[in-house]
Amino acid sequence: MDIKEIQNLIKFVAKSGASEVSLEMDDVKITIKTGDGKTTGESTTIVQQIPPVITQPVQAAPPVQAAAPVESPATEKAAEENTYITIKSPIIGTFYRKPSPDKPVFAEVGQQISEGDVLCVIEAMKLFNEIESEVSGKIVKVLVDDSSPVEFEQPLFLIDPS
Image 1 (cartoon, rainbow, N blue to C red):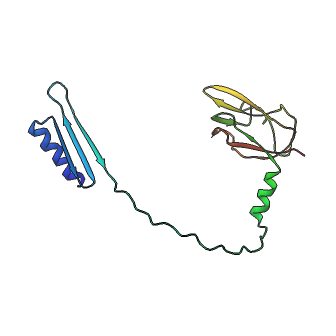
Image 2: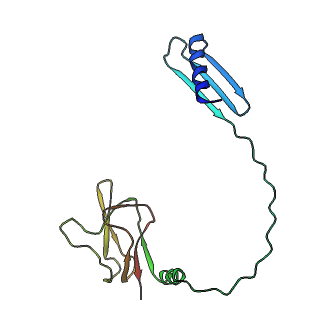
Image 3: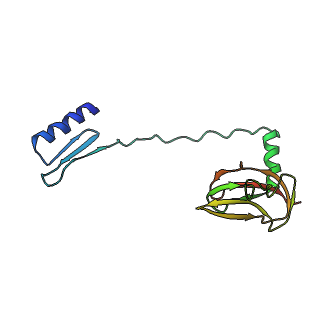
Protein backbone atom coordinates (compact mmCIF):
# COMPACT_ATOMS: atom_id res chain seq x y z
CA MET A 1 0.00 0.00 0.00
CA ASP A 2 1.49 3.32 -1.01
CA ILE A 3 1.07 6.77 0.54
CA LYS A 4 -1.55 7.92 -2.00
CA GLU A 5 -3.81 4.98 -1.15
CA ILE A 6 -3.40 5.73 2.57
CA GLN A 7 -4.27 9.40 2.03
CA ASN A 8 -7.38 8.45 0.01
CA LEU A 9 -8.41 6.02 2.76
CA ILE A 10 -8.05 8.77 5.39
CA LYS A 11 -10.21 11.14 3.32
CA PHE A 12 -12.84 8.42 2.78
CA VAL A 13 -13.04 7.61 6.51
CA ALA A 14 -13.30 11.31 7.41
CA LYS A 15 -16.19 11.82 4.95
CA SER A 16 -18.00 8.64 6.01
CA GLY A 17 -18.42 9.82 9.59
CA ALA A 18 -16.93 6.68 11.12
CA SER A 19 -15.04 7.32 14.36
CA GLU A 20 -12.50 4.52 13.92
CA VAL A 21 -11.44 2.15 11.13
CA SER A 22 -8.82 -0.60 11.34
CA LEU A 23 -7.37 -2.24 8.26
CA GLU A 24 -4.88 -5.08 8.38
CA MET A 25 -3.14 -6.52 5.33
CA ASP A 26 -0.10 -8.80 4.93
CA ASP A 27 2.61 -6.62 6.48
CA VAL A 28 0.71 -3.38 7.18
CA LYS A 29 -1.78 -2.51 9.90
CA ILE A 30 -3.58 0.84 9.70
CA THR A 31 -5.89 2.36 12.32
CA ILE A 32 -7.64 5.64 11.52
CA LYS A 33 -9.48 7.51 14.27
CA THR A 34 -11.52 10.64 13.59
CA GLY A 35 -13.10 13.13 15.96
CA ASP A 36 -16.50 12.22 17.43
CA GLY A 37 -17.84 15.75 17.21
CA LYS A 38 -16.52 16.81 20.64
CA THR A 39 -12.88 16.82 19.58
CA THR A 40 -11.40 18.08 16.36
CA GLY A 41 -8.68 16.55 14.26
CA GLU A 42 -7.79 13.11 13.03
CA SER A 43 -5.39 10.49 14.27
CA THR A 44 -3.73 7.89 12.08
CA THR A 45 -1.54 5.05 13.26
CA ILE A 46 0.39 2.98 10.75
CA VAL A 47 2.31 -0.06 11.88
CA GLN A 48 4.38 -2.02 9.43
CA GLN A 49 5.14 -5.51 10.56
CA ILE A 50 8.40 -6.95 9.32
CA PRO A 51 8.41 -10.70 8.73
CA PRO A 52 11.00 -12.62 10.77
CA VAL A 53 14.27 -13.38 9.04
CA ILE A 54 15.33 -17.01 9.09
CA THR A 55 19.08 -17.41 9.20
CA GLN A 56 21.09 -20.45 8.31
CA PRO A 57 23.74 -21.64 10.77
CA VAL A 58 27.20 -20.49 9.79
CA GLN A 59 29.97 -23.04 9.65
CA ALA A 60 33.24 -22.03 11.23
CA ALA A 61 36.08 -21.43 8.79
CA PRO A 62 39.13 -23.65 9.20
CA PRO A 63 41.94 -21.98 11.15
CA VAL A 64 44.41 -20.07 9.02
CA GLN A 65 48.13 -20.10 9.80
CA ALA A 66 49.10 -16.57 10.81
CA ALA A 67 52.08 -14.94 9.17
CA ALA A 68 54.81 -13.36 11.27
CA PRO A 69 53.56 -9.98 12.60
CA VAL A 70 54.95 -6.98 10.78
CA GLU A 71 55.34 -3.72 12.72
CA SER A 72 53.48 -1.00 10.85
CA PRO A 73 53.70 2.73 11.59
CA ALA A 74 50.15 2.62 13.00
CA THR A 75 51.12 -0.21 15.36
CA GLU A 76 54.19 1.68 16.51
CA LYS A 77 52.11 4.81 17.12
CA ALA A 78 49.55 2.80 19.13
CA ALA A 79 52.34 1.27 21.20
CA GLU A 80 53.73 4.76 21.89
CA GLU A 81 50.31 6.07 22.94
CA ASN A 82 49.92 3.15 25.37
CA THR A 83 52.82 4.55 27.37
CA TYR A 84 51.06 7.92 27.69
CA ILE A 85 48.36 8.79 30.20
CA THR A 86 45.16 10.20 28.74
CA ILE A 87 43.40 13.04 30.52
CA LYS A 88 39.67 12.68 29.78
CA SER A 89 36.78 15.10 30.10
CA PRO A 90 34.85 14.56 33.34
CA ILE A 91 31.78 16.40 31.96
CA ILE A 92 29.98 17.39 28.77
CA GLY A 93 30.58 20.97 27.70
CA THR A 94 32.73 23.34 25.67
CA PHE A 95 36.53 22.96 25.88
CA TYR A 96 38.66 26.09 26.31
CA ARG A 97 42.47 26.16 26.53
CA LYS A 98 42.53 29.74 27.94
CA PRO A 99 40.85 31.28 30.99
CA SER A 100 39.69 34.16 28.76
CA PRO A 101 40.31 35.21 25.14
CA ASP A 102 43.03 37.74 26.06
CA LYS A 103 44.98 35.41 28.39
CA PRO A 104 47.62 32.79 27.46
CA VAL A 105 46.76 29.08 27.28
CA PHE A 106 46.88 27.03 30.48
CA ALA A 107 49.23 24.36 29.07
CA GLU A 108 51.29 24.01 25.88
CA VAL A 109 52.55 20.88 24.13
CA GLY A 110 55.99 20.04 25.54
CA GLN A 111 55.31 21.85 28.83
CA GLN A 112 56.19 20.07 32.08
CA ILE A 113 53.16 19.90 34.41
CA SER A 114 52.60 18.79 37.99
CA GLU A 115 49.69 17.00 39.58
CA GLY A 116 46.94 19.55 40.26
CA ASP A 117 47.98 22.03 37.52
CA VAL A 118 45.02 23.45 35.56
CA LEU A 119 45.11 22.18 31.96
CA CYS A 120 41.92 23.73 30.58
CA VAL A 121 38.38 24.77 31.45
CA ILE A 122 35.15 23.18 30.32
CA GLU A 123 32.08 25.36 30.25
CA ALA A 124 28.84 23.59 31.14
CA MET A 125 25.60 25.48 31.74
CA LYS A 126 27.39 28.84 32.08
CA LEU A 127 29.82 27.44 34.68
CA PHE A 128 33.53 27.23 33.90
CA ASN A 129 35.03 24.07 35.44
CA GLU A 130 38.82 23.94 35.75
CA ILE A 131 40.24 20.58 34.68
CA GLU A 132 43.34 19.72 36.69
CA SER A 133 46.06 17.23 35.85
CA GLU A 134 45.82 13.92 37.67
CA VAL A 135 49.52 13.17 37.08
CA SER A 136 52.87 14.90 36.70
CA GLY A 137 54.65 14.75 33.35
CA LYS A 138 55.04 16.42 29.98
CA ILE A 139 52.15 17.28 27.65
CA VAL A 140 52.64 15.29 24.44
CA LYS A 141 49.49 16.20 22.55
CA VAL A 142 46.31 18.28 22.85
CA LEU A 143 43.54 16.15 21.35
CA VAL A 144 40.75 18.77 21.20
CA ASP A 145 40.52 22.11 19.38
CA ASP A 146 39.90 25.24 21.43
CA SER A 147 36.22 26.27 21.79
CA SER A 148 34.91 22.90 20.61
CA PRO A 149 32.26 20.74 22.29
CA VAL A 150 33.43 17.69 24.26
CA GLU A 151 31.62 14.59 25.49
CA PHE A 152 31.91 12.77 28.80
CA GLU A 153 35.12 10.67 28.94
CA GLN A 154 36.40 12.20 25.66
CA PRO A 155 40.24 12.25 25.62
CA LEU A 156 41.62 15.79 25.97
CA PHE A 157 45.40 15.49 26.53
CA LEU A 158 48.16 12.88 26.26
CA ILE A 159 50.68 13.11 29.10
CA ASP A 160 54.12 11.42 29.19
CA PRO A 161 54.60 10.57 32.89
CA SER A 162 58.35 9.82 32.57
